[in-house]
Image (cartoon, rainbow, N blue to C red):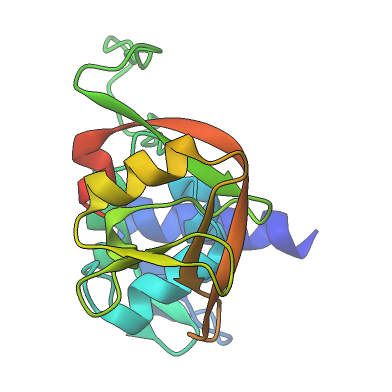
Length: 183
């Protein structure tokens, strides 16, 4: 029940730019991290990584994100559907195209839902392979090519608390290169 309430409050903050505090007063709009992850089609861990890196443009307020920065970040996400309640009745919402408009790449996805992306370079290199047998690749494309040749793709990435460890791919995801490069 609390997840549904958080989603509703976060959507309201995205749509209006404000939230309500415990006394019922309007305050700066904030979105909880779990809701932002759902709206953006990523894991909470990915949101936390974006926040800790400071590269995604998300502004943290306590354990939440400002609605303005969240809305800006979500505009670039194919998984996000903007609210239609503010559109005039005569304007019909346009259904998103199931097809991709630009170049598509396949990336491995781990059991936790995280996937391999350009933001996983550490010291300018990608660590690919089983623990103890890793090979460093200087570019995302070279690392992705190596992953695609493996029976079980393995790469290093930070966990929710920022510790780097190996993860194994369980599936593959099709994603536009433009979107992938913005991660």
